[in-house]
Amino acid sequence: MDHIVECVPNFSEGRDRAKIDRIASAIASAPGVRVLNVDPDPDYNRVVITFVGGPATIGEGAFRGIREAGRAIDMTSHKGNHPRMGATDVCPFVPVRGVTMDECVRIAQTVGRRTWEEAGIPVYLYERAARTPSRQNLADVRRGEYEGLAAKLRDPDWRPDFGPPEFNARSGATIIGARPFLIAWNVNLASDNLGAANEIARRVRESGRVENGHRVPGRLKSAKAIGVMLQARRIAQVSMNLTDFAVTPPHVAFDACREEAAKLGEKLNGSELVGLIPKEPLLMAGRHASGGADLPEEKAIAAGIEYLGLAALEPFAPEKKVLEIVLEARGAT
Image 1 (cartoon, helix red, strand yellow):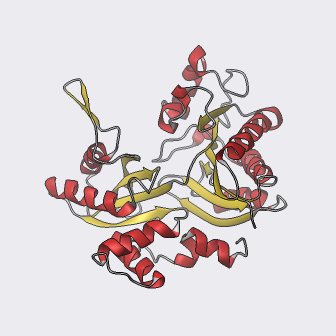
Image 2 (spheres, rainbow, N blue to C red):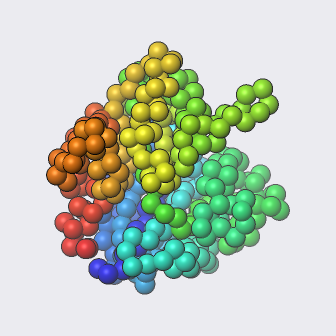
Image 3 (tube, one colour):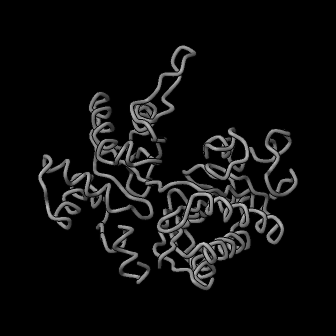
C-alpha cells in the first residue's frame, strides 16, 4: 500500500469478548481495511483496536466500528479505571505513509458528521482536527467524563461539533480527530501504591502539578500521565501517552519514572504497551541500553524490549506489537 492511514479507536468495553469481537468484525467488514491489533484491558474496561487502510477506505471502517459500539455498549452501566466519555471514547486518524495530516483532518470531519447523522452520537473534534484551541487537548475535551457530560452539554462553550447539545445516555459522546503517532504505554510499579503512581505521574507529565496555587511543570515534554490501579495484577501503574517520541522516547520516560519512584521508596516492574509501537523508539531504547553500540536491528529491538521490561507482565511478541513488522506480515507494506 502506497497510502496508509492508521486508525486507533478506543472503545469502552474490555471485558465482554463477544461485544469486542462484534466491534472488530464491523471494522474489518469495510473494504480495504485491515485490523492489525485488538488489545482489551479488563481493569480499564477498554479496548484499543488498531487498523489501517487508504484515505478512501479508513473512514468507513471507523464509522462501522463506532456505529457497532453504539449498539453494543450501554454507558449507563459502564465502570472502568480509564477516563472516558462515550461508547467510542476517542477515534484518531494517523498519517503513516503517503498521506498528509490535512487529509486525516478531512477524514475525521467526514466520520464525525456521519457519526451524528447516521448513528445519533454527538461528536467533538480534537487535536489537529479541532476547530478551536480549547479542543485540541484530549484531556480538556474529555474532562468531566461520561458522568459530567450532561452538565457539560449545557455549557454553550462545549456544544458538540456535530449534533445538538443533547445527552445521549446510552452512547455518550465520541471524540474524533487527527494526530501524529502516539505511544500508549503503562509503567508498572512493583507495588499497589496508587498514591505513589499518581505522584510520579504529576512529577513527570508535561502539565506537571499545582503547588501552593502555582503550576509546577513536569519533567517530560510531550508526555501525559495519570496513576491507575491494575486490579488483575494488584499493582499500580503510571499510565502514559507519549505524543511525540522524537521529543520524549519511552526509554527517557522510563528512566524518569524510575528516578521519581526511587525518591518515594518504590521500584518499577517493567512496562506494558497498549496497541502498537513503531520500530524506531524500540531501536532508540536498545541503543541506550547498549551504551550507544551499533547493534543489528533485530538485536537492538530485543535490547529495547528488555530495557523497558515490556515482557514483565506477559510475553511481548514484536510480530504482533511493532507497527512495521505487523504491516509487513499483513501484506500492507
